[in-house]
Length: 110
Image (cartoon, rainbow, N blue to C red):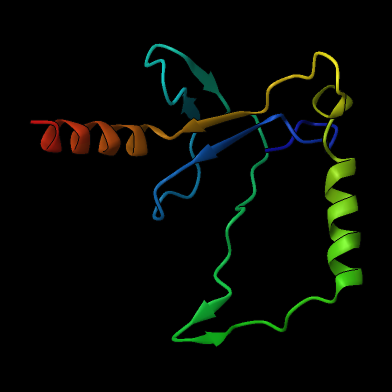
């Protein structure tokens, strides 16, 4: 997710595969904690690179990987990169994923 200035928002949300855009992310451990992310710009982080045992794209060179990594690291605000009192990067669940997790726990916790 991105802030209006183009920097990372300091949070990611894990969703079910079929979910495209969610407005609220939920804390994975504390059910009453949530964060409204409707005003954030989002991008998909996982991309299919193989199918039926074959690569879908050509592999990147080490130079390309290093350049991409440096560019992405530059988008992370300084408060997440400092060694002393660094901010915690938030990772939350979509409502559907949270509900599915809770359903599975209830089903198999007997």
